[in-house]
Amino acid sequence: MSRRLVPLAVVLALAAFGSGCQGPFGRVLPVNLQVAVSAGAGADSQTQKSLMQLTNQVATEYMRNNPGVNLHMRFLPQGTLESTMRQRSAFGAGADLLISRVESAARLDRDGLVTSTGLELQQLAPLHLHDLDRFRRGRSYAALPFLLQPSLACYNRARVPQPPRRLADLEALAAAGVRIGLPLEPEELLWTASAFAADQPLLTLLRRIEGLPGGGTLTADDDSRLLAWLQWLARSNVQPNLIYADTTDELVDLLEQGRLDWISCNATSILRLRARLGPRLAVLPLPGGEDGSPARALARFIVISFGRDSTGDERRAAQKFVLFMLNDYSQNNLMDRAVGNLPANGNVIVPTKESPDLSAMEASLNNAITLPFQAGPASNAATQERLIHLLKQNVYGEWGPERVLTDLKAMGAGRTQP
Image 1: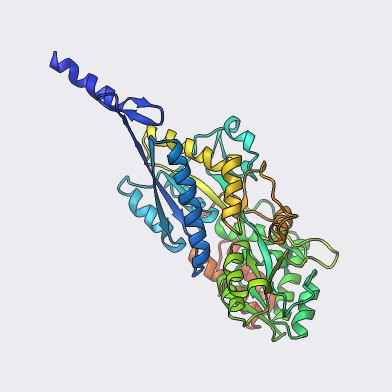
Image 2: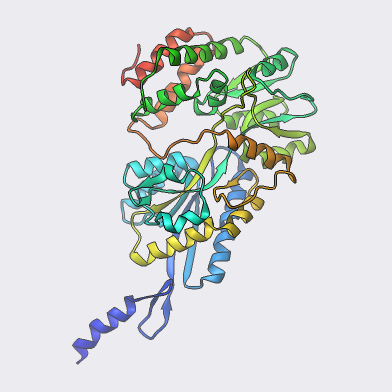
């Protein structure tokens, strides 16, 4: 008799009930979910704090209404996110959910450390998620868009009373004594390439350099556009008031310190800059082309990925929590609480008339470039450093634009120039 009761007790202990598990005496056992959140990069402590508060508030609201789920939030710096995930996954203890930048999620996906969401179009269609098709994998999705962070122009209105609308205006401002800052990160310079219709050729080249399918061959016209862009970069540095930095984080530091007057920035820097500059801070979409076309700037995706080590109960609970994070109510609150982020949920109305910042962010997003969810075998820090080195050689006149273009194409073909 007792031998027959033992397996029955085990079955009862493991049986799922709602969002938890049924205990041996009818008690519902909670499901514990480990949620890893990448808290951003660099020294932008206010942006990191904002993201922490944001996700904690969402988790608290969810647990209040779903007592059978315990959410354990772990905040990781951008620089240690991937290594931490690899270490924990080696012991079968990876996070059930991961909230991170799309580049990190794509590399973890490439290495098999995250898995498909298991959610299908019929569950997600009512949310009208931005660029959802980019994440499709079979009937489900490799990751899900969560927040969008557009690129902007951030400037000191006391020093820049008439902001630039075209790239040529930016050069004129520098000639008039306004201190301009631009980054040397290739993706962050896409908006300048768009003024020469070189953004798509540059994206093709970057995909090839990462080891991804190029999406077509570079034509002679593409080469001419890329060369015109590289020539502009080389000419621009002749102007002493136009300064290049390795990263956008460095530019934010310099504007905050009053050593620059106008920079290209990510919208997540608004909170930090406003704390220092107050009403002197202004933001606008980045300058466009000479023909009046708007700049096509990079918009960062923050995405949600699912870990590979979850049990069936944990996966189902994670899916329910994700749908809560993406619903109209949560996404509207996220936009209000996390300055610099726009909702991925297309049902949420952005109050552009009430906020100049949101108006600029929405305008930038309407013309933005978003990167696909795919990381090639050469997608790593060393490749990024090599690209920045080449752009430095061009900007500082060490090599001519023609040689830099040749070297970029050689990288895309899997060769390295001497």
